[in-house]
Length: 519
Image (cartoon, rainbow, N blue to C red; front, side, top):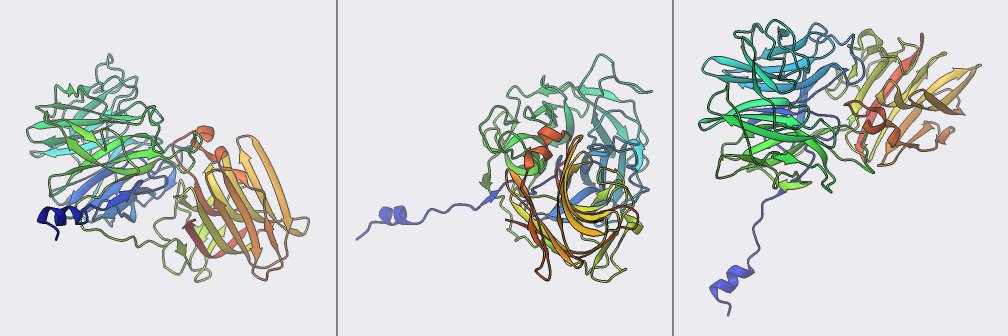
């Protein structure tokens, strides 16, 4: 007969469920988070894509649903001068006295701005502008004051310039968040722990101490998170002697370039960090910097540490919140009155060059530019969120002398596409690869009629194929390498989009559906 201790030893061990990182895969970098009751809201950078600043909602910190964008009108978002990886940098979201605030930097026009709303689903206000240099703004509210932080540009300038002796670091002023007016001169706060490019500041309070969370090292392999604290929002700030509190530098991990964190506290007293990271393959990554989640622990001296001893794991124990299940679908039948929130265009609304009503149940695109490298391309895309994926669409194309097709796009100089065109009275499906100044094509003749265009990907290659609905035309093109669409080759801060496009006067494509899924 088993004794009581024996029965206890034989009982199954109770363990908490885990989650897998990243929690928002694909090109969703520079995450910022706020909590309102039992709901969490998160924003990320959007650079040259329109609408701007994707907005997510969650009740468990693990399953996130995109509910829209913060910047949905041209009056809010001027990207006419935005080149690749310019535009909207590093938003911060905060909630105060029943109002949501988002601040970010439009590096291509205007600088820092603040927008607000009482309903995160929108609409959001017109931007108000803050006259402070740098990038990566943030907000902290206390005692009726709104503290506004940003980093310091290498060559300070302006009426309220900081001491020119401080080449890099974090600066702060007080603002009116509804007008953008500065209510005091800008003051320098902290130069960081010694890493290059101190940026992405977030000020918060825990107990009697004010903490200044910062990213350093640049948003590549040297990225890290550091922290300092003070007895006042104005400092002086004492650097954590154990900095960095997060770093994957020189670490053999599938997760790299971790940094740009923001903190949130739960009802149970636990703290969590959202942050960006990458999942490189053979030293490169092409789907962008992604959003990761990790627990935050506090030591006996009151200093935080992110993840497991400053490292983010592919799996962590879940927060003590009721779990939810994912509800998103990768298929769009274009049956709704508006495009799904995952779709984005380049620099401005696609407007009259797209329609969901011209042929109900179909998306119609018409060409407005000459080639796929044009920054004004008629393009609608969604982020590639999985290294192994498949995407397909059914199209009825009237390309004339232009193109109608499916594209994997990193930027104007790095993209692969498969398109329908007409040359010398013959219809072709063409697979083109553009890498910098180099371009190469393979073509296959097809007859008139609907075509299913498809692309799939893995760590190393993209594969394009086409199939006519009558089965008479089918062709699989030679796979092309993902490496030429990687950040390490193309540069910049974005990730690959998988999209639909039309170029050339008179070119029209009618798309019945679009299907994207993880393989």
